[in-house]
Amino acid sequence: MTGLGAFLRKELTEIVRTWRVWVIPGMLVFFGITSPIIAALTPALVQSMTASQPGVVIRVPPPTAFDAYAQFLKNLDQFVLIAIVITGAGAVSGERSSGTAILALTKPLSRGAFVVAKILSQVVLLVAATVLGTAICLAVTAVVFPGGNAARLVTTVALWLLYASLFVVVMTLLSASLRSRGAAAGAGLTFYFLALLLSNWGPMARYAFFGLFPAMRDALLGRSLSLGWPLVTAVLAMAVGTVAAMRLFERQEL
Image (cartoon, rainbow, N blue to C red; front, side, top):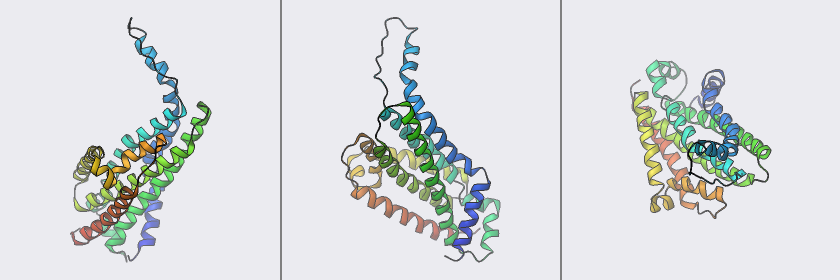
């Protein structure tokens, strides 16, 4: 792990000073603000859409803080995860194609440290942005709706954050193993949709990290959670994926 600390600091500085600081954080802040507002406006929007259709009546129950939380989680599961896939596709392949990987590795920096720093910097950005977006969502929801259960949203987002961090590792592995950013993005999107499908299959949901996806819904609803195997397999998959990315990158020509 030669040079890990110095290269990690370089990656974090680069994130702050480039467009990457605006993509994931910008999306999370945007959804934190708009999710409660959209939940509050949904009944009025539905009524306006049906007003011009005589005889059509759609009754929508009054929105609550739960609807705001559910809207926020929906945005995390869809838009933010896909953004993680797309931005993570070039984590290693982008550096390799532009030639900056060769420049960095001529310094006292090991290839393993290069990969680990890429993963850690992305996870740090993701954690900071998620905490900020969740805090904003809770604050706006408290203004728009009475009541609410902040603990449920925090638990749900914590599960999502682990799931999203796994996607960071997967995308770094794909980016290290595939030379094309587009190929890595395509493989990542395939993994995203495959994980979505497998999360609905009972055995996979119970005994693999795919179970984190339905567990988010259960946490938001206040149901009892059985997270033993999903948590263990998620952590194990992240460890195995990190080691695999390091080994693949060490064996490739730049």
